[in-house]
Length: 349
Ligand SMILES: [Fe+2]
Ligand SMILES: [Fe+2]
Image 1 (cartoon, rainbow, N blue to C red):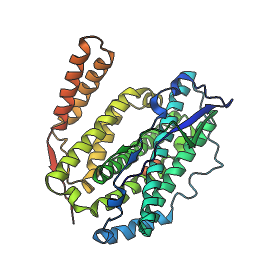
Image 2 (image 1 turned 120 degrees about the horizontal axis):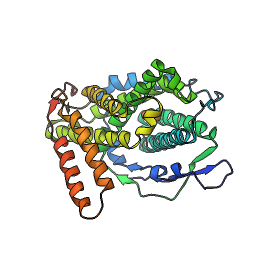
Image 3 (image 1 turned 60 degrees about the vertical axis):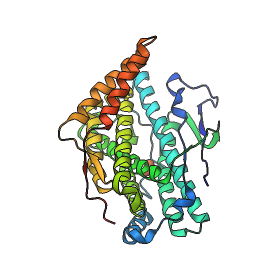
Image 4 (image 1 turned 180 degrees about the vertical axis):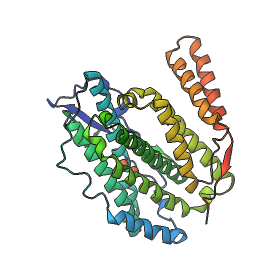
């Protein structure tokens, strides 16, 4: 049995109407929501990873960031930004608030399903994760409010069908999205510490403990994966590792190249940033997945440049050139998917 969580947050400008500036009037206000095998999830055998579960539960219960996201902190100390730079910053805020809020909805739903199935401790565990994501979304919502943009998150209109994924897919992709989120936040934080003149908004001052939340969430999902040893064994484990690492890295590369203006605003080279995030995430994933990509020969990282190039050509092409450009793009990404992997020591149960 499955449950759905879907919708599109309503957004309005300061005057309360729904006429948005053009940079916010795109598809970014339509996050995807997911649904999974909740009944199967309720059968999670925690005893397989009992020690890890107790440790992670205590860590989440401690709520280290309870006071970090200060509701009174002023978020409107924007540096002098040109209207186009301001638009880049606002688009970033909206994309981020929507993705944090999607995380909240999914964790909340999982938590409710566990509680209904009588799995109290797991229900509480996922409530901690939902708590953090709600806090992140709320904080970004405040930053937007100080820009005069109201995102009415709880009021979900225009229902969208949620996408169904098996439990293993949800856990593999959640693990990666938390860990890649951690690396994105921490690398931006480190760069801005070295280049304080580029920290154009007070929001960035909050990134360090924030990224530790995402790091912990990744560890929580890793613990859940260990409770399902079949997911990481044999050919299934290899295929799932390959597919999710590749798809998450590909999405990251294309997103960073499409939204390069945000990184340039912070004085970050988008191509180098994308590369560093991928290298670090692949390395961290050694702790959870049975296989990770092998980067020593440089092929995976090099291919990103050709992939971005062919993606842009495909987008710009028309008529007969369009299917040809698409064929080139698809053949490149499939070659990247098939690149060598190496086994990790993650599977301990
Ligand atoms: Fe988050
Ligand atoms: Fe998270």
